[in-house]
Image (cartoon, helix red, strand yellow):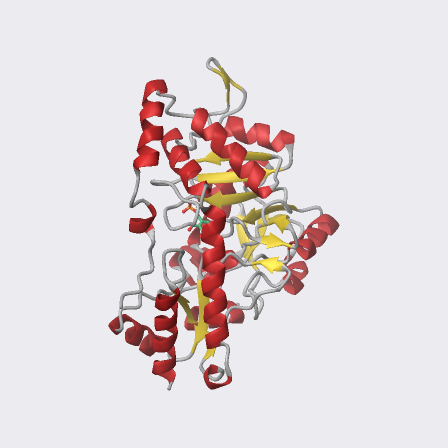
Length: 369
Ligand SMILES: Cc1ncc(COP(=O)(O)O)c(C=O)c1O
């Protein structure tokens, strides 16, 4: 049996409905900031419960443009966890600000809220928490700290569309949030795309101008901006994928629950930990990450059995060559480093069958037997 990690070849096995929309689009030729993007932004706002959604070029831009339009820049510090995809810290660096890392918490592996206050200094301007792997960070506690210290919060929700805390969608707690529509994300397009959500009219207006050169109208630029538009062609694809988003998420949650039920047991307790989740929150399992002993051996065993597991990620951000100037060393963020050494992502996408999940479970059990 094969258990592939990616779902993309199946997602578009019948592209005819998209081709039909593209034929209509070619009659209008509104290639940038067109009708389909307006529909996509509306869908995004309605789905998350945010007042505004603004499409931009990438998830990375969604984060950096939000920070910039909130006034974050050179001389400022921004608090963020060191266990994320490069882009979270990359987006902070893009603004000219300095990232200040706060370790993850053992357990859900989101930023350790109990350590944030010690990292806040005179230069701190914002916090960028990450809803890691699709698991909501503790936004009520983070927002309370931000309020106390007068800081902005931009949520990195790039992996977490559809995740909720109680009934509230992640991304709607902070001043703004960035989402990614990269092909590996559940709501993806045929290339790159990102979305910012915010409840602020003023910020949304600034972002709409900034992503399009700062252009107020054809002949007037209100302030210098960038070109980070979400292509209309991608919006057509995004609108199509939106139709099955909740079904996709529910299938992933069902697979994760199946994994948990089989792997969270006495016989495996010495070798493996399943992801932590809080019952009142909705973890969307962009990644089903377990912590394992003897990862290299297990990875090889799974590969030989046709199961495509991956590592997200082997080297934390503070130990990357790009972070040298920040002056960190091994041992600075022990929870993050422990995660990097032991994390393994099992396939968990919406096109896998229960049999494929059971087969993967059997192979994991076999390895540790
Ligand atoms: C946590 C996180 N932040 C930011 C990004 C950046 O998104 P994009 O690739 O759309 O720029 C990603 C994408 O993988 C991500 O996983």
